[in-house]
Structures are given as structure tokens and as C-alpha cells.
Image (tube, rainbow over all chains, first blue to last red; front, side):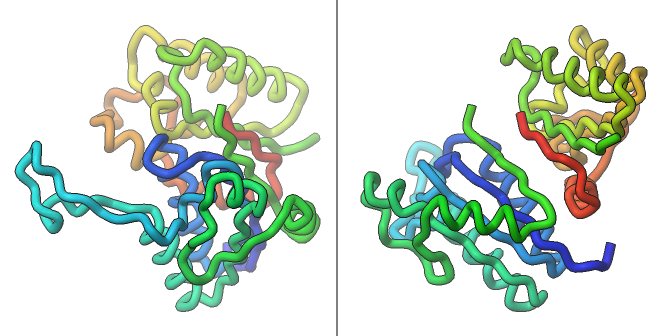
Length: 137
Length: 108
């Protein structure tokens, strides 16, 4: 399918807790790989996906130093998606729910994301070819 | 007639509402809608022949396309020769194809 599409993904899960995060970011990455435009509305714990202060850690229990452990952190995955979008011509509009950010003190995120509100989600859904809500149960 | 893609990320061993989701897929198909059930994460566990694979095979027999995420299958060591009847391996890209075609999408 070569035609450009615009998809909206609504994410709720915080990082490091559920495989839904991995699947959501896989889907977004695949869409960007196609050059499709992607809107993301991150709310509740998902506002931490791009939190700038995430830090990889070593694992002394397993005898792994930082390099061996190679701990995956979601801010790098989100950053990689944004970088891929620049190469493929996809537009990624990633909105961090402002209320969710404030109540969590999660106001520091990597470049490329922006603060927004549920009004952005309404605009996203109106402007998208399709919407997938990946909610926490 | 509408087109639906139902993504199932949970497995019936840990989540008692999975059979209801299968029922939803079959009900939509019985009403003449085009339905794909896409299994991902632990949702692929019943795609392996076993005590809980009858459910997904019944969904497939009802006319629903039942697909299982290739990555999730590989993560769990489920080979093609162990797949339950009616289940096909597919890349996650297929979900994007359906989203791009305007399928109504639900996640569970």
C-alpha cells in the first residue's frame, strides 16, 4: 500500500510495565517506516514514554555492566521513531496530555514531543484515516 | 457491511474475558461483517495447539480471518507446525494494512 495515510494512536500504558508498550511502538515505527503520518496522544502513564530523565542501568545481580546489560529505555525508542520519520518524510505529532504530565511531574521530555490536551485528540481523530486506542485494562 | 480488525493481546489462561472477545468476532462475522482477529503478545498462546486452542479454531471456522503476530510467535517458540487449525502467521504490518483500509479497530 503506497498511499500515504494518517493514523492516530492513543497510548495509556507507562513504560517498563507491559508488552502493550512494545507493540504500540512497533506499530508506530512500522507506520513511520511506510512514510505515513502518525499522531500520538499519550495520556496517563504513557507521558513517561518520552521522559528525558530515563537512565539505563547496569545489573550487578547478573554481573552485567552498563554496556552488557544494554537496558532498553523507551525515550530512545521514541527518539528513534522521530529520527526515522525525518528520513521517510512521515510527520509525527506526539502530544503529551498536559494534565497527566502535571500530576506526575513529567514535564521534561525529549525534543519532538509537545504538550497538549484532549482537544488535540479530538482534532487528531477528525483528521485521521483511522484511530487505534491501546488502553490499559 | 463493515470491516473490523480485533486485536487480542491477552490469553485465555490469564484473562477470563478473552472468550467474550472471540464471541464478538464471531457475532460480527455472522452478521455479515468482514472480521480479522489479530493475535499479539500473549494473545498468541492459544494459537498453539493445546487445551485452549479450540476457541481460536472456532473463530476461524466462523469465517473470521485469524492471524497471529510472527514476532510474538517467535518470542514464544511457537512454530508453524504447532499452529492450531485456522490460524495463520502474519507480520504486524498487516494490522497497518487494515488500518489503512479503514477497518474499524478494537484492542483488547
